[in-house]
Length: 336
Ligand code: SF4
Image (cartoon, rainbow, N blue to C red; front, side, top):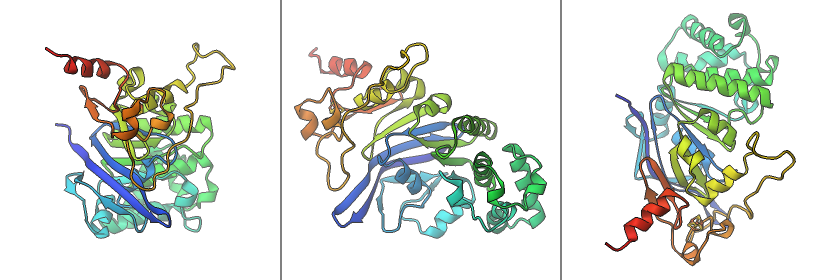
């Protein structure tokens, strides 16, 4: 039976600023099962990374977090102390961070950085921990792994350092892996290699993978399900093929329209961009946060929070969804 790795209900995260409370995450629901890849997409500043860091128990100092349910790997984590989060991170939950250069310690050999955590959490001997490190370095494609344990991060290329980060995240044998924009700092060919590697590992190890990205090409290549985030909320979520092929939310449709399609988008044609900017997140939100940028907006959109429509594993938060959901709402409203 497939196991649920994450059940998150109504996650809210706010930060105090001199101008008032910045509500970075405004009621997020997410689920992830074993063996599944969920991509969380959206523009910079929409709350993706804050959501991921909350799930890791690593939200910024001073952040106020509230949830109705926060179940990770079968443990309810709402209000749990840092000690409980550290235990979870050492046993089953792990993360690959955006930038290896800020996550790897330049003054320590990588062997020590890979093995320190598991020696503490699992009480492994140095020999056993190094054997696991060599096995994983080999698995992520670092040649002559045993000899390289004594080397320092600067002795590895950018792509190799990201492979090191993946190996480090796998050292604790996680079941639930979060990857936050893991290829941002890499050039395009290396990005493709790293993503292929992640997809292979996810499949071979049966991991649940939560991948945070703003790159829809990545999503198309790797996702089982997609959650689209805008201004701190999930505005659309469903199977990747459905969200890509039949977007219901005008924001998702705008993102999709901005992807060039080989053979269909004429060379040199400017791609349509979504007009306007993401709204500020300070203070309460009235109506739909996307209203000022949405071509479909009507009066109700600026005054009333959009309802959530749920249609067979596809949900959207909008007053006027675009396709099948619009028909479904109309038929519900039609008098008998
Ligand atoms: Fe556009 Fe209204 Fe839907 Fe918001 S609720 S996305 S403004 S149609």
